[in-house]
Image 1: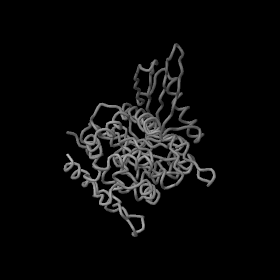
Image 2 (image 1 turned 90 degrees about the horizontal axis):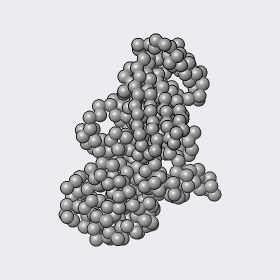
Image 3 (image 1 turned 60 degrees about the horizontal axis):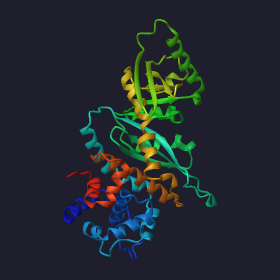
Image 4 (image 1 turned 45 degrees about the horizontal axis):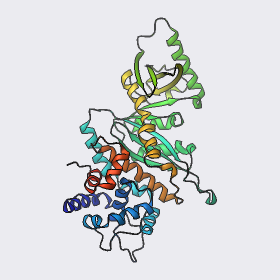
Length: 386
């Protein structure tokens, strides 16, 4: 098994060939690739920072020495801390590009999805601030391919208001060609819509009162349609019902061509349709209704519109919630800017690796199995199964 581990893990070194070692060449005892791979393995096994990574490495020293290049044994916590503090987050993330591409190609080949939905949304790590030194809580904007279980990219900002500038940068990091990009209302911006179309993708953008005139015009146009006893034959409607967790949910999706007299219509590149989603929830005899509006570059096809909207919200359930519950990211308190960004990316990437493994176990159980079983850990890290 040890020989197989070494072959599998050494193959991962190719992904980090372009990563410059930020450490001084003096007394550099531990190869950078080995340090990074150990960090990934430890986080898969439940570690939450440099101290825990080093503790896990000490427990697994015999296995790691057989599997990786470690002529001086396993590193101490100061080595992991120094590396994760020194690595430029953008350069570090860029090293995963080829790895993510191979994971994405495999996931696409195994699925029947022809136009994946890539959800863009932000998350704040609430306890990562350092008020004493003027460092605000880390707010990361991510691209999540829910249908593949892959986090494709991350850009960090100081607060939620900077998502508007972070989203274009994030989209440039990811190959979005042929996909549907979904973004909440804060990211509904003309420049972002233009960039998505220029990168040969479609968009479904949530619409709220931050675009007051456009929002009101869409609301009025759809209301006129809904009140019409003989609705337009160009409109499409689709209804779904779900029961679970003590509630009954009915979603009605309506999509129609975008009227060209909408305010600023010609400035929204690629705009073709508008839509509405009406969610009716019945719980304990109490009924609530929530209504959301959208603009989109998609042509008419209400089931595709419905899939895009529904898939977008999985970023909250399958990424953000998992990071908080399984990874306890909100409890993490790194005080160095690079350290917290690199740690956040490792969390997202290892979660993606766990999602790729075919085991039916929960993510929490998969992490436990990574801690218990070196063969299972190697399978997850190398996306192989025996």
